[in-house]
Image (cartoon, rainbow, N blue to C red):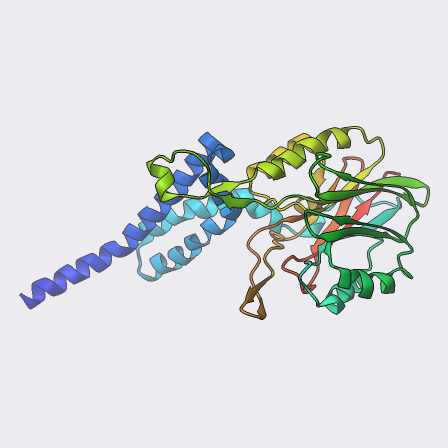
Amino acid sequence: MTSRLTGLRSQWRGLLLPAIIVLYGLFLLGYGLLWAAARDRLWQTDFLSNFTAWYFLPAPVLLVIALLRKRRRWALVLLIPLLVFVLKYGVHFLPDTLRAGWHSEARTITVMTMNVLKRSTDWAAAEAQIRQANPDVIAIQEMSDGFLSSVWPSLTAAYPYTVSVFSPLDESSMGVMSRYPITDQETFNLPENYELTHIRAVVDVNGQPVTVYNMHMTAPSFVRPQGQRRFIGRIFPYEYFTYYRRWQMDNFYPKLAAESQPVVVMGDFNTADSSGDYDRFVAGSGLRDAYAGVGFGLGYTFPSEVIVGSQKLPFLPLMRLDYIWHSEAIKPLAAWLGGSTGSDHLPVIAQLQLPA
C-alpha cells in the first residue's frame, strides 16, 4: 500500500510541470486570440494589454525548470513564447549603432519630459536630474506650488525662456523651459470644455522653428457602470474606462495636422505602448516614438516608486507612459531614461536631429 501511494505521488509530481505549462500556454493563446479578435473593444483585454511584455516572463523560468528535470519535449514547447517575445520585443535590445538614425553635421537638440508628481516634495532630486541630463528644452507635468517656488526660479538662469500654466483638472501646473527663444506660445484644452490644460510653444533653434507640445493625457480609471448588470457584470462590477484619454487624442489630431514646422510632442500620455490607444495615436498623429526608434530596452517609466503608509519605496516600473514623439522630418539619434526625481514616473530624454 505504501509503495502504491509513493508511486501515485511520484506520478502527480511528474504531471505538475506539464499541467503548469499547458495552463500557461492556454493563457497566452487565449489572450492573443482575444486581442486579435476584439483588441480594446473589450475593457478586459484593454486593461490586460498594459502588461503584455510581462506575460512572457514565466517562459524562461519554466524552461530552466524543464531542462533541469530533463523534460526536453516540454522545454521545446516553451521555446514558442520565447520566440514570440524575441519577434515582438527583440528590436528594443539591439545595439544603438544598429538602430540609431543617421548622423551628420546638421543641428541637434536634446529634449526632456518629466512628470514630477504634484505630491512630491523631493524637488532637489528633480532639479538634479534636469542638470544631469542638461537638455535644451524641458516639458514638465504636475508641478506643485512648491516646485514652482523652489526649483523653477533656480533653473531660469540656464533656461531663460519659459511657459507655465495651471491645469485645473490636474490641480497642478504644466511648464516648458527652453535655452532657445520661444517665439510663440499657446495654452489649450482638449476639447475646449475639458479642463486639462496643455502647452504649445514654438522654439527658435538657431533659425529653425520647432513646435513643442507639452501634453498630459487623462489616466484611465475603474468605474462602476450604471444600469442593469448581467452575470459577467456581477463578477466584474467595475470596468476599465479610457474614454477621456481617447477623446483627448481624437481632438489633438486636427491640431497636429495643421502644423507646418517640425514637431516634438512630449508628456505623460498615461498610455502603455502595448495598448490599443498607443497604436491608434501612432496612426492618427503621424508622429514617431523616439524611444521606440533608438532607445535601448523596454523603457518602462511607471511606477518607479510606490507609497506604503508614509514611506516612499522604489519599485520596478511595469509600463511606459512617458513619451517623446517627433514628426518625420526629425531624426532621433538617442533616447534614454533619467533617474529618480521623487516622482512615480521616470523622465525620458532624447537627442533629436533637426532638418538640415
